[in-house]
Each structure stands twice: as structure tokens, then as C-alpha cells.
Image (cartoon, rainbow, N blue to C red; front, side):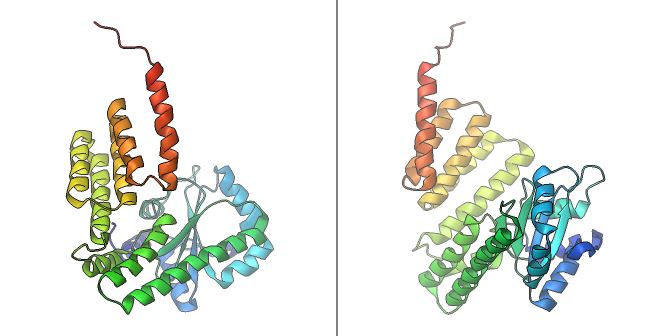
Length: 302
């Protein structure tokens, strides 16, 4: 998990500039202040304005249209976070991209007035009206999140943990489980004896993130594999989390060119949560790899 996201924004804001052209703001702290005062959410547009074809298309087809300009500001403070190529990218924009784990453009992140993300999307065909409908559907994720958090606040123990997990899992499905450290800590405390398996689920996720962060810096794949195996053995997390751990292991083994070990890890991932969408996909992937390995010629003896 990352540091509390709002605290990070306070540092970032020192380096940003402000632009209110066409109703869009470039300064994130200004956007947060406006969102709090006006009780609106934020729409963050991570874009490559001078090179990204889909970004330019989204702007032309949706953001520049009068229907969007008129309706979207009723619910959102619009924030442009640009990654141009013809001019230097602002350091603060790079930091925001890192915080929100942006990997492609355009990426649209929706947050509440406190800057906590609740949905992620991108280009959608159909023009401004369709896009506004899409945004309205995504805003329901926040409503469900808040309703579950409110219910959880009234409960204790496993029941509280399950309600928090339901809300956090919805955010995870949107790929925006960022900045919810307080709720995760509440969940672990509520299920402190791991009766529901939820404490170990989130401990495993945290430790997995630490491993990925560390291997990215150190390139110590062997050490990372050892740590992944220890997480699985020590915490024995629920199926979906265990599946992700085995997928990380498979990825590391692939980087090590250990095809046999990768196949074993993929098989373990499939067996960890066989009825899930990923479990079904892995069946096909494993079958294809096994067929490929079966027809490979044996290695020549030296």
C-alpha cells in the first residue's frame, strides 16, 4: 500500500501550475479545494496531448463537445494531467501518474472530493452523451463504496471485516485500490484472528506489493521467488489472492527463462481459483504452453 494519498498530493501541489482554460484545472491541490467547496468529484485526465491518438480523439469527440462542457462540471472538477512529448513533462505529473499507477493513455481516474479514487476508465466511443452515461454508471461505484463503509462503521468483528472487504474488492476490480490504508487497517483489526481469512488476504497483498517494489529496484529474482513462496506458505491467503501470488511467481520465472517452473506456477495459479474468469483463461494458456513444449525438439547434447 502507498502512503496516504492526500498527504502525497500536498507535496505535489507545491510544484504545479494552474490553468482554468476551457474549465480544466492543472493544479491538483486547487482541484481538491474546489471539489471540497463545491461538493464535487474529480475527473483526472491523464493524457498525452500532443502525441497520443486516442487522447486527442477523446478530447475532440467528448471533452470539446458542448454537451460535455455543460453537463460534466455539474458533478466533476475537471483536471488535466498532461504527458506531452514536445515539452518537458512536469515532475508533479509524473508523481501523480505513479501514485495512480497509470500505465497507458488516456487514463481517466474518478475520485471523491478527498482525492480517493473510485473508478478508472479511458476512451469510450459514442460521443459526449454516451460518455456522460458511462461516468454516471461509474459514480455508482462510489455510492456503493460509501454505503458499505457506512454499514461497516456500525458493525464489529468478522461482519465489519466482510463489509469492508466487499467495498475494497469493488475498488480493486476498478484497479483503484489506492489510498485506502485506514480501511485496510480497520479490516485487519476486525478480523485480527483471521477467522474470515481476510486479515491474511490483505497482509499477503501488502507483502506481495513490497516484493514487487523491491525486485524492481534490486533485480533479485531469486530472492523475490523465495519471498513469494514464504507469503503463500505462511499466510495461505484465499484463492484469488493466492492466484495472484502464483501469477507473480510465474512472471518472475518467465523472466528467469525457467519455462518448466513458469508452467508449474501457472498450474498452481489456475488451481488456486479454478472457477474464476482468470482460472478459465489460465486453462487455455496452460494447454497452449504444454502443446508448445511437447513439440519442441530435445536439446542437443554437447
